[in-house]
Length: 147
Image 1: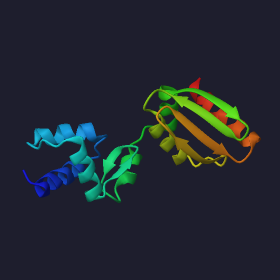
Image 2: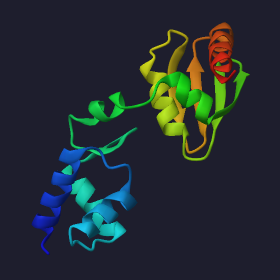
Image 3: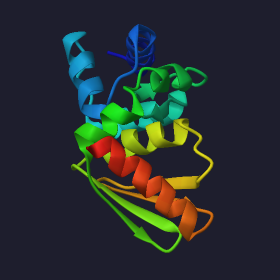
Image 4: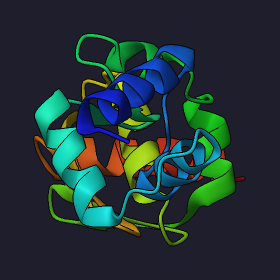
């Protein structure tokens, strides 16, 4: 099948909702009769200008809708955060593997005054605060959600 028909199928899938990762996209396309490898999917994603958000791949301008589907920050913290440690004005927040991105997105969505920003890896979130006192208050808030 042609590249154009594959692109059309990808857009139809995304109209139905966000797709969490390339493996899911590959599986959904296979169900529609398309056999595309990882390199092909990466190229398609780039060419279509798809956006990766906490909820998965989405069409540009619709990534906010995927993020709105995130569970509450309290639930995400309880389920995925394993520890929070303050280091001066920074908080190092450990999560289960693969969970840092959605937790960081939920934390960012709270717009807490203590947090200037977050950087998320695979299982670690770095939260930058204005000062040591702000970091302490935010650490206490997150710790409270873990209880």
